[in-house]
Length: 318
Image 1 (cartoon, rainbow, N blue to C red):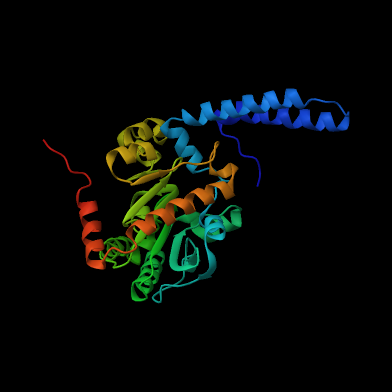
Image 2: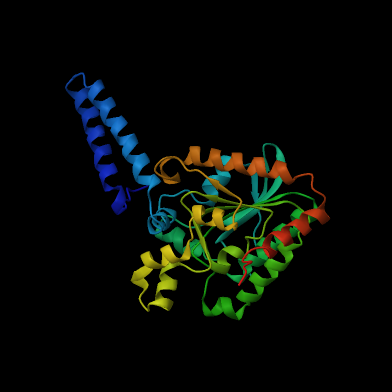
């Protein structure tokens, strides 16, 4: 993967390069520089901790969109075993923007699905940048109904800039497909664990986002609208996404306070894109822990709790 550097990361990257150059020089010239290198590495770690602990909302949006950030298939590879992908909605077509199938989590059969973005231009076009068509939502529902039929828990990874807004998608019932999923997922008689791993935009995310436990990675975002789209509506200027991000309160820290999500998954220092294995390990720990906490709840109670959970969101007093 090529090096992608965000503006606030430049001092960190420059110091990393300096350390790399010093290590290479020490080897080439057979010079003892261990103490100097150790001091720079300590300085680097402190700089990273300070920088990433003080990110504003827009900077976290940028990290969530980082091209090198791990996507659904990266997590599936590291968290689950025996993954068998299921294709098609049995009505129109397969939607590559959604990956869905059967797998094992610590040996236990589960159903896993999530939006998949691409890295190369070819992959991005094939995956439609992680934006699902109606057939993607219908494929998701088909797989979730299989989970209900065989009484298997569902694990869902969310990472999308939104549902695809094309004319064809609207003609094939984009809104209805999302609404149908909201209804069906609220009544699904098996545990549902949701993990927002990157972007969680609008109905594109919510269409597969109704669950018993909502987990969110530290540098992900989750909102009814993207900052740029919000800015275009409020100020008629999409470049004011920075202001919109602050107003939307779309970060994990905001949403845990508002009661929209249940847990924040801390990322490796510098973001998940710097350490795939460590990020996946933390995600797996949270999935397993939360699944264990609801595994034995009777289906009727599970559904009632889920409906009550969403019914309480947005409650206010005048």
